Length: 438
Image (cartoon, rainbow, N blue to C red):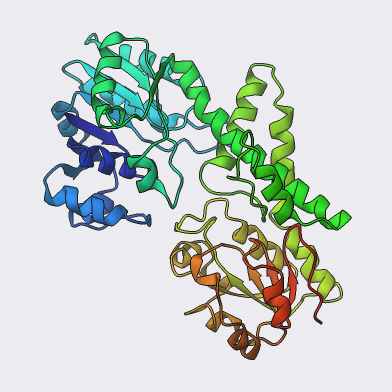
């Protein structure tokens, strides 16, 4: 089948590459000429494990194409996926301007029946808006479908090729049949395709992400309480997660959630509720707690240094919002850097993948280390902000030689407590006892 993907951001590129891998001819459209030219030459514009291999394979197999010409791609395809940004506006609501603009363009350009698939995360009722916009521009028949993505950054290729389910919101039998054909390679292996109405499909994505944000935030609250009463959050987590009604995933405490999805989707669902005179109290609390959780270790750093960190050099391991991605959107590292700089500290940061994105944002406000141990040179303390695998088993002896003080503030609970204790480090993590080795 010939398929067009409009937008080659994270969702669009992974979706397009996956659909090409399933045997379709996929035309990816983007207005960024430099980006499109780079992709034509095999340059993947995002970091995602295993994506480059699949990307190059499908270019070489002549199933994956890139263009800035929407009309050209539109004419070649019966199915058009919209994978456009829906950033939060000033009031937290999803900005649909990109989606509406492309819907206008499609309505003006289409010459035959199309299925328009909303892949972007959009508020309830967006399919109706897209349908109205296109219908105002053409008399040619078409259908609008909601098909939200459930990709985890860092595991997107795995998730795209082995999804837990495919959700499709469609009221047209013809559109359902076409979508079932696209996803037949999945359903043939037992992966369910769940058909529903468009509004339920749109809400499913918001509900899923918001629930996971709540789950993470609840665990962070439990971790903070553990510190008050002397309990160990690792043991509590194992005890809770062993209940199959709860499960082990998304129970790891830390310095809050970030990224392109959870913060944006929680805000958007809260705003959508307000528009319907409905108050998502649990989401408002989640957002408030997460904001505080992201910088919870800064007060601990201040406490350790007697209330004043001016002139202190803080090494930071990790800048991405999570491991295995270069995404720094809503990253906790940025909140902590801003607050530490405000309080007069100096930052030496290391992240082999996300460094360039932070440098574009912060410039020379911080020092960018060449390696994880380079960041520790003369450091008064180490702050771990991202759980990259290379940080899991460091050389503590070398760390001690490099650092001015043997002090670690771990926002991701990277180490069993006995490891820093055996190596003579002061070690503060989340929801566990502090190892006091001043």
